[in-house]
Image 1 (cartoon, rainbow, N blue to C red):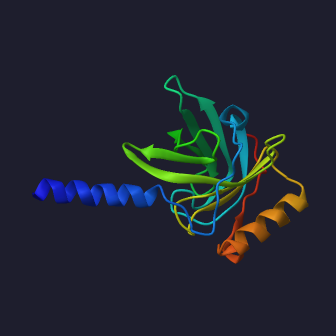
Image 2 (cartoon, helix red, strand yellow):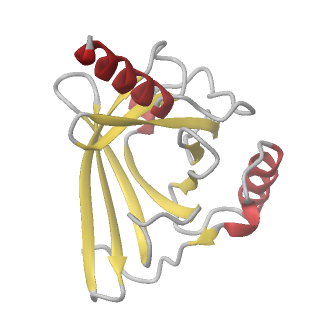
Length: 176
């Protein structure tokens, strides 16, 4: 009986991590292969795993098992060095919906919800986690068009994110 309760609680916890904010709808027509390559982090809500980082990028590549490898890299000024984390991602459900689960810590996955995307050229992406405390603006260029930034701010604000708490990431150092 005790093991069933533990299993139930673990399932509920993991299911909560794969959810998304109510006001968000992941993009449809998503093509994972077009999402591959390097993305620059333009803006984010603060989290301990990225605190103090600048020049943050995320690089996506195909895995042999059909998922994606994710390599996040950023410069930590306090230590004067680059930090890198490698994870894995898999589509959740329908492959044409921009909802993935991402893990950087063993068997624990969290939602990665693409709720805004330049679906023609894949030049920008608006991304959320499982709740309103995770938010990113990604771009293929370190300085996206200001209209994209304004569109991101408006969509995120309407979805209930604290856009006044966003950190805009400096990209002033070449990647090693």
